[in-house]
Length: 69
Image (cartoon, rainbow, N blue to C red; front, side, top):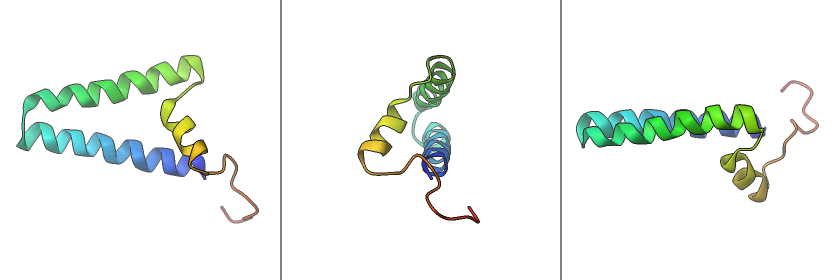
């Protein structure tokens, strides 16, 4: 379940930053760079701030008891 939330939130943030870059100000591209750097950093350190926040909000790390998920 955590993985699903993570992918949806990060995907939304990337799309939002692209839209803001095109329609508001090109400096919003730095937000996209920030997201990418954090994804790379989390691959090496095995720590992600978004994951920590989601767990504290009560999102379960496993898929729960759902056998079809």
